[in-house]
Length: 62
Length: 275
Image (cartoon, rainbow over all chains, first blue to last red; front, side, top):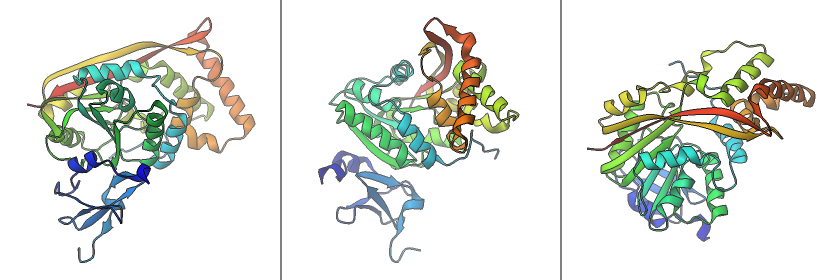
């Protein structure tokens, strides 16, 4: 399981590419959540995919 | 926009090619990597962002340079590309690399995060290159340096030019505007103009030239051929492929020096400091 874990130091410096706002790490869903953008960026195999096209729209987001 | 690539713009497909054709461990392009590392002022312990890392140039060389107390964040828009870099890092036992996918025009990093930023063969791709450099400047710490390497002019890149002309002749096609983007910023002064527009200071720009030796045995052009024309090759019969390789071999004959080819390679290296 450790192989798929995201590097904690990477989490510290990451922001939302759209809003440059903070991200919340959801370890269970393996997602990085930008409340401001209403997007959840997936983490695949330990690598954050910070592409808006690949992100999931949060419920309630426009 | 006059967007074109050698063939197709499908970086996922090209990424798979690149990953397959990347060196297994240390770089065979270390000459250029070390020039970038020096221009960016990278030292042991630095935390470096490598944009458009691709198959790992110069991320792998940089990870070795910064050592265990430093780190390299390898960043690319294409997961298939970074898969190759990750494999190389594992082969070398490097533990100070991190990986992330995203666009270079909108970096997902906080302001003033990195000691240095590098980018080898990437800045010619974004439509708004000034904005892309601006993003690199934003995440760079004040006083830190960013270094970009791009291809030098075609005439001073023997491997590329001979291969290109031979492939085009084989398919009986004329050179198109396809290659414009590859050689964006290839003339001396163009990188300086870009970096100045992005607000950098203490800008340096120079040619990095090398007479690369490639073995006469085997097909030293195979990797570039795959990377540049792989999709087209996939539709060819074995016989057609043999003919193409024979034509390429003949075209490189003037560059044979005993048991190796000698090929001029020219890149441009531009760097600047964040105020």
